[in-house]
Image (tube, rainbow, N blue to C red):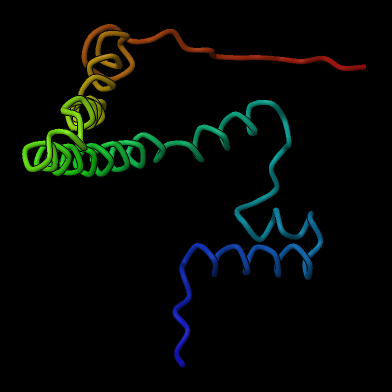
Length: 135
């Protein structure tokens, strides 16, 4: 039987093997030079890690919106066939929720444009430097 390996699983396995075989200082040099573990690099790593999150949430919102819309139509069909067993509100709630989820990415993009996070409109405030002195 041929086993299909997901790219993410393969990358995690490689990272674990690298962490076990190579010392941490050597691993930093192997991955593009030594870096400091300061607040700025941690913030950059977090920002870089969540860059694709809005795209993932958009896809999930569209998928769930379409699914709930179809389930709502099926519930309304059940109501037409047997009104005593299936109330009309069940289908209407599913269709309304599906429409709200389907519109969620548009609302999110409008919110970002209103706040000025994108290139359109006013530029957002930025933090240019942060220092922490611990003793």
